[in-house]
Amino acid sequence: MADESNAAPVAATAATEAEVKAPTAKKQRSPRRPKAAAESVQASSKASAAKPRRYSEQEKSEKLKLIETQVTEGGTLKDAIKSAGISEQTYYHWKGAAKPAEPKGTKSTKPIPAGDELADLVQLEEENQRLRKQLAEKLRAENAELRKRLGLD
Image (cartoon, rainbow, N blue to C red; front, side, top):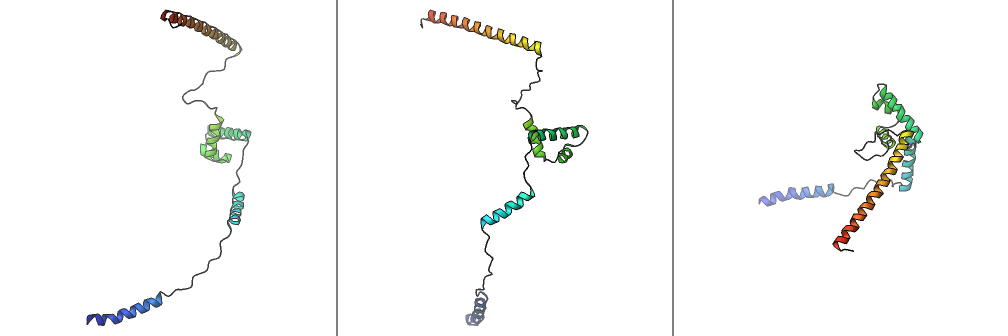
């Protein structure tokens, strides 16, 4: 009996849910723009916003010198870089490229020899070559003597 009394309201609820779940018309969207047109619009807006600038080597060195002078006069590095109109990353990139490439751990702080010192250096190089040849001849002679004693020849 309890089942019969509960059956009526359940049937009514099922009928109302069916009415609520009736399909509704979907909202229509506008079609997408073709990709080529969208890319050209984006490219033109980007080009006008920030066009990459290429600096010559002379301009780079001038800007680096300007920054160095501002820093030595007591200004901060960040302010000097901003006043030069470049980014910090660009500054460090240029600064690293301006230094000659040296192996890590070796610093050549030797001064370049003058004219007389250069002549002495050339003379020492010639003597070094002569002594190397003399040593090589002596070692060949010893090697040949040892081969004879061992009977390898």
